[in-house]
Length: 254
Image (cartoon, rainbow, N blue to C red):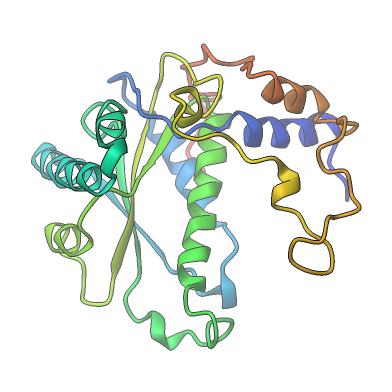
């Protein structure tokens, strides 16, 4: 059954206004909201229904400090590897580990080799499945008025050891979640001129690589989400000042 137009528009709005956030306020996240975000993540699709994601909530201040140290070390190593863009990279804020209200680490579970369905020729589908869970959480967080940032700057083995993960498990993300003063009007790296969004025509083919597609995916919006889409194209964010979680007083979803 088709959703109502307003519900459809809300989905597209969350997609278009989602941002990889780096700036947070120290305000705590309502536990009921966090529970909803985690449940949204856990309802992501996964290849062979393997559900490879594991979430570690970091509440120990010492652990948070240690994770920040790992991230900062990799940040500097990344800068060294960037050559002429080193200084430009070092001016970017690439994480909010110390400031965010909630810190989560996402890992791939151990024993993933047991899951053959959908992975025999594409073993990386465990990572793709976990990325779907992260995206679910990201969109839910945006709808709740919370910012989220995915940090991938860390030494995998060091973070695995720090969080006492079993052999075979693999951390793939440090997620910063929390309240923000404002959402970026555009992706931060686009605002900072690090990179620009590619035109969709460069990513969309028909019947073969590089054959132009007949569909006009970049045409004028005509769906219930046309307002949100148009706002994104012009770089505006109608909810940029939202810091309060929506429905924060609702009971925890079991």
